[in-house]
Length: 304
Image: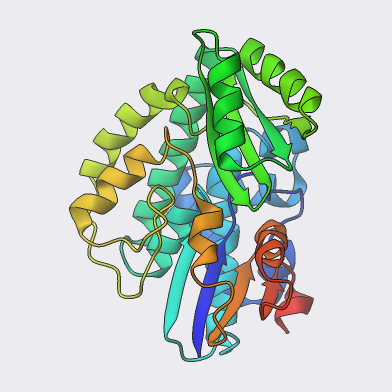
């Protein structure tokens, strides 16, 4: 039976995340300690104690989630909770970096540096342009795309996350997102403005993507030991060069999570594990297959 590892993305963070792993497992403590050394500040304290408003900022939440997921994985792996494989990996947005690290593409230190830079550059791009995101429920891709085209009015307004059937997020300028939310509601869909720093996975993030292209050229990458799925294509990564290219595109293009999971959600020989923190990906998987064999490892109690 294949084991599919799900790596969470931004939005899964919460104050206290990873503390039970730190307190219980020496492997997890080592990961948090190494993270503090790499970053040059006490990320561990922010994860465990907050304040929440700092933890939720993009430049902190992205490395915090990466580190917490890796701390969870090494503890589970050391206790043979994940089995012997074969393994497959997928991560939502920043979680793709976690997946690539765990599949052997990049070292922990390089992955953490990249994620920290990604969060910093995305925060800068978000601060430069007043922008936001809106979740819409009940619409399909063609309906959302049509609404974006109608309400953009020369501003950025694009689909950003295909999370699950009938659950799509759009990104754009604040005024365009406001128009989209109003028109989506009028069309009978449920539109929910999100509390985010800016329009992630949209052209507004292009300055961040350009800087990440430079960062990725500095890092040694090797072909994955296990399959890893790309957010951009919803297909398995192939060459090292294409991994670099797709990680840059990922910042400005939509995350095709629904299409990724659809390929394996109904396969009888797959079992799924979602790493800490949070339970977002477990919920999205269940929207595609309520009977999927999935274990959420967001707490030590769940792991044990």
